[in-house]
Length: 277
Image 1 (cartoon, rainbow, N blue to C red):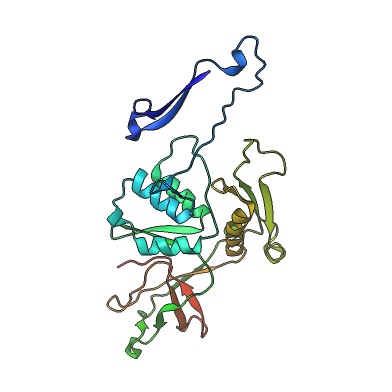
Image 2 (cartoon, rainbow, N blue to C red):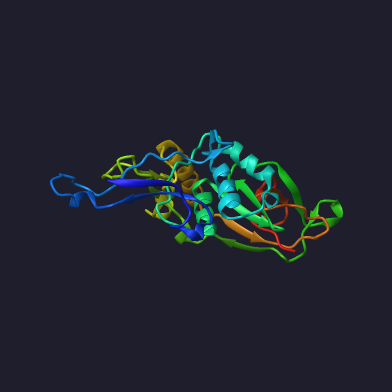
């Protein structure tokens, strides 16, 4: 019926690596005297392993593996500290998926990072992975109007404030996650919906679809979906400001204390989305 080549280096020369290929001489449904009802082929595949034994399942580890082994990013340009920290935050989540077709590494990493509740940053040619959590963390800097206090001074009249567009607000998410091993996505299976009653009351019903194809487990998919629903169920404020460059030492996703600025109240914190010199 078929032949298997475990070390095929010619069928996909552009990959630059050996692959396993299965060649079928004739579609099953076209075989005379046999009653095949489908031409689908099912195979049991072992996932990628580290050191030949440990299965790579942690989303942050999967992202690092793809960047290094498929994106040809040198190990020295992948920040181990940030990837290890993200992996620790994702200890209870596991990716399990098959890529049925070739994808660009950049787009694949961006999609998987989104599903993993992570952001990938490139800073000074190095790749960093950050797990996104809206629980305010320790402030890495304190911003104040007066730079003479020894804290992070903000340039006068540099603050620009804007708010998330109403089109980006969600009151519910309709989520599809990976199909089961039968390969069929039946009605009501591998799908769920999460709703935020307060958001629907305040802004009306605003549904958004999410595809978490990298997850097989519904609870893990729900954990990520709940984070995005919480994030989009509110109208967030964005602020852009200028500081004195010789004192501002923060990175994307650091928390900063903004309570000392005239525009905000005491005790308020903000998450850094980006910096530019």
